[in-house]
Length: 109
Image 1: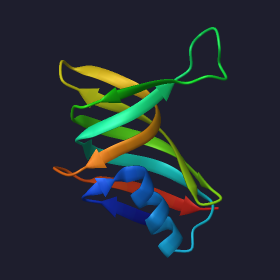
Image 2 (image 1 turned 120 degrees about the horizontal axis):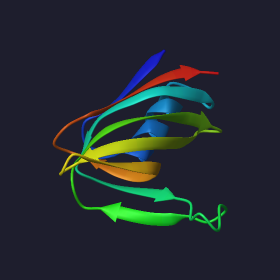
Image 3 (image 1 turned 180 degrees about the vertical axis):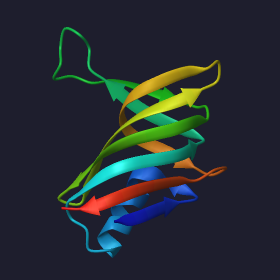
C-alpha cells in the first residue's frame, strides 16, 4: 500500500502525479480522507444518466471517499461534510488543498 499525501495544491492532479512517481498505472484508492478549501463534484440527472450536473463549492469540506486509478487517471467519488452539518456527494472533478491535508491510501493492481 502507498499513502499519497497532498498538503497544498489541486488534489486529483497531485494524486496522479504521485502515483506516476511510484510507477502506479492502475490501483484501488481504498480510502481518501482530509479537508479541502474548495471542490467541484458532479452527479447524474435522474432523467439522463449519461450526463453530468457539475457543481462548484467555494467552501471548505471535510472529505472521505474512494476510487481507482486506471491508466494513470484518478477516478474518485467523495462525500464532503460542509457547514450546516450537510453532506455533498458525487464524482470529484477537482479540489484545492491548502489549509488542511488529504491522504489517499492506494493499493496497486
